[in-house]
Picture 1 (spheres, rainbow, N blue to C red):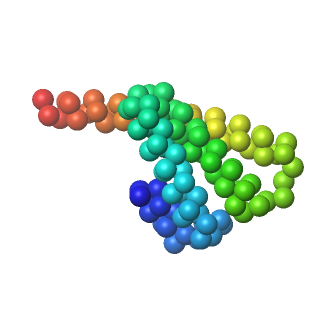
Picture 2: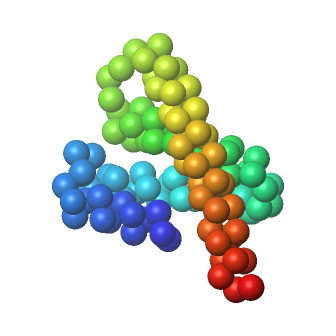
Length: 109
């Protein structure tokens, strides 16, 4: 749900993807939620979920928007999107979560 709202905000802010960005964002959120529910709330689940969610954007571009790129370009895009999502979304998100958790413990003690 949150991802779909994110997509709606992107549309309102004139994303170059246009209206399909709502579906693309909802698909991302579905992947992350599913992986975290299957693997549990562990760091690996966040890394993997964010990587696969980022790669799902490329799949959306390839199979829904039917962009006419060669397979080698899509392969490079999948790899780059997965690692980007893993590092910036997964690792960065886990670090942020741990930082907030520590600060909340300090504030409540």
